[in-house]
Length: 180
Image 1 (cartoon, rainbow, N blue to C red):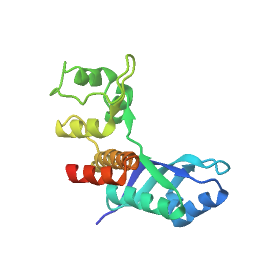
Image 2 (image 1 turned 180 degrees about the vertical axis):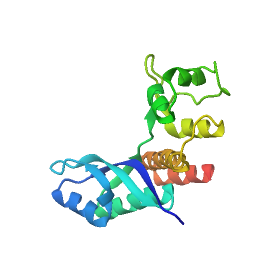
Image 3 (image 1 turned 45 degrees about the horizontal axis):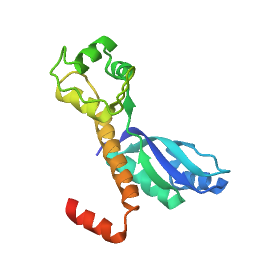
């Protein structure tokens, strides 16, 4: 199976110490730009350009390697984009994108903003890219659509896992049975 380079950002927490940066490189994060203050530890991020057979394999391997090095993944960036960024990524004008959003042109049912703001709302690139492809409005690579979808699902899964840790073991078990 051919390998593709997938770009994504992984957020994590780490203990302090220079050894963490070295450990991340040694476990395979040599394809990432790591942002972490080794003196204080805490939250950090890593921008990856990872070659893999699938987006899922790329993200999962980064998570597993990070845990092996002693960091705890807390999220994968949900790629929020403005109308201007959507226009840039699709080669369209901001006006054309605005027409999709307001249903003045196009098939309608453009994804709702994830972060609604009076001046510049932010949209989920995963949702927008899938909408664009489904409606034949942009030629996006399958890899771009795939990584956007996997990042969205992985981020939600990691967030849910963190939130579940706030529940008692009994409540976690009850919840798991209810949503299974």
